[in-house]
Length: 126
Image 1: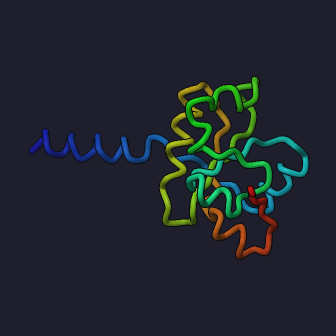
Image 2 (image 1 turned 30 degrees about the horizontal axis):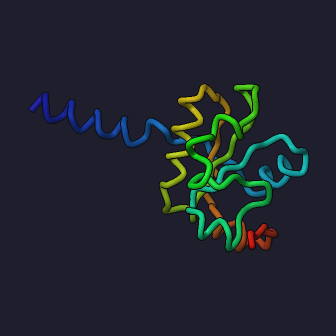
């Protein structure tokens, strides 16, 4: 029984190990305007082309060279997002950024769906 409880607790910790604090749409918008954030879109390249948060990096396309795309300062604000509140794909970018030593990594839980629903502009790629 103790082994089973230990296994369940271990799985729960692993599942939440790369959860990040949330950032609101207004706070992210302000950080983008101030050029004080690096935004990572984890929705896949096709979705990225159709519309992403302005300045966002396409994680699918850039994950192997993410270190080159992130700022030098390890305490710089990094924000990852995916489709919306029920999506957990953002955790891949959080994990990668934290493995690279970044300490101020946040999550836009509203995702691209919430960003659009709030009437915010998106960038597209031809």
